[in-house]
Image 1 (cartoon, rainbow, N blue to C red):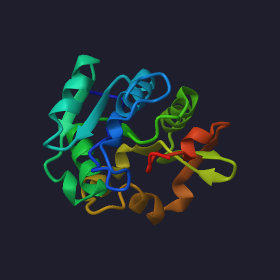
Image 2: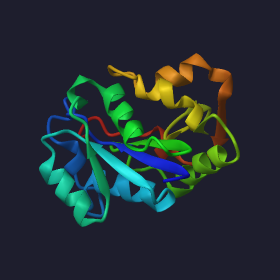
Image 3: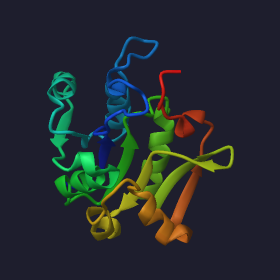
Image 4: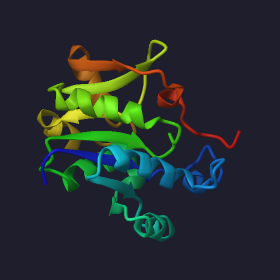
Length: 185
């Protein structure tokens, strides 16, 4: 494999939501996890979705749509473990475009903006909307050791916080980069 790989983190347990929010259908009738995965894979064809060990139903839904999944045995220990697992599974990539399953409203152009910023040589890349940084977040291959060492719940923010001056922002007119779904309302 070469090039930048997409990783969709979808191994959360939806505690605040009260049900498996990944299967919540959007206005168009598509489950949230599938909508998010399709958007990422549309821009970054080499994409994998990270799931929990007990995610057979979600795994089948994604496989039926032609999407590749990876099971993270340590997903219950936090987002950092899922991100580490995803990066390890695509260790020969030149970088990773990391997205979250509960952010289905991100526009394709926002994914593309972050991807292109990485392709132009950024070490770290992310969209910014209305002065606020959002998702997805891009990491180049120099971040590999830091990413695979992640544990707990902070995820990639740990890497971003270490070298904030290395983050290249791309301005987007997309409130979806800030909108995650944590509650049914």
